[in-house]
Length: 382
Image (cartoon, rainbow, N blue to C red; front, side, top):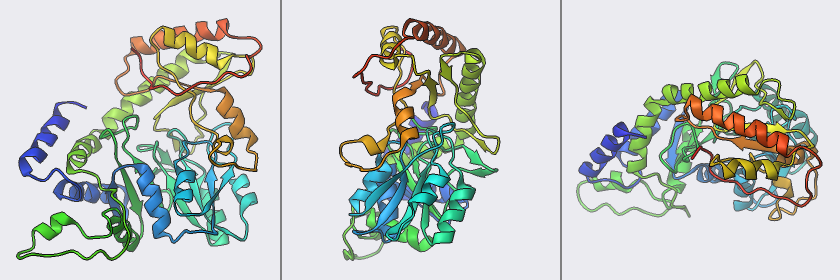
């Protein structure tokens, strides 16, 4: 973020309306709807809020089951729990980490009402197969595109690959306002329902303030405080205009990593199928079984190089007490490592990361130590 974003924030300060659902938020929603060809867009405080509101608008509740991709930040499964339903975890493809359509098909049961697919760390899932499954069984399909703004699947943008999609504008994403999110949908009525629920169940206070007299809103349903401030919306309008520039920088970093790490026997590079493109929210490599991941991470961090474990195998998290297994997801959770990836990495920094990573792999190859763990840390190079 730079001078353009600061200038946009200054304009909001001068306008006198920094809160949510004001003119900047409305303008951002219009831009998002146009960009994705959506029937409606709702600017929200984060992607978790978008997932929650999507399930509420789709009528999910107690007794329902929703199939969710297992290898991801747990926000989709959390959202299912928010509405009193049960998340059912689907295993993922070993090569992409995206949800395996065959696993989804095998999990459909009498209580299944829908599927939440995840564009894993920026790579879209197999939406042709997933759409076929959900349409055949009369299920909804939600795209969690939190990490994938700028990615494509068969020429279509991530965020427009299912009837309902959720975006994130968290600080690690391709464009950001620090925190933020959006719900995109082909159905204008669903968008209107989500917008109302995002503001405690009343219409926009900004709109009410423009009415002559003393308008008093009626609370027509229980809602939440999920609004995105106009300050954040103004930042995102600028970032949305810069998205191609920022994504090109990430692609260049990914290309450099692929070039320098080609042929490295102790890790596997990310796989991008020919029918899609990656947004590169993260650059995640899979370490060979004999590499001690915690040791590699310690070596990198000792040199001021950030790294993390990639993402989570949700079914093994204690909060869910899942009685199922997702062996591919569990293996990725144990072996993947996220190395620095953002739009401001220089070529020299990428070269330094690769040199340090290669040395750390050699120093930590052997029998992995048992009982080690790795806590996620912000990416980047100190």
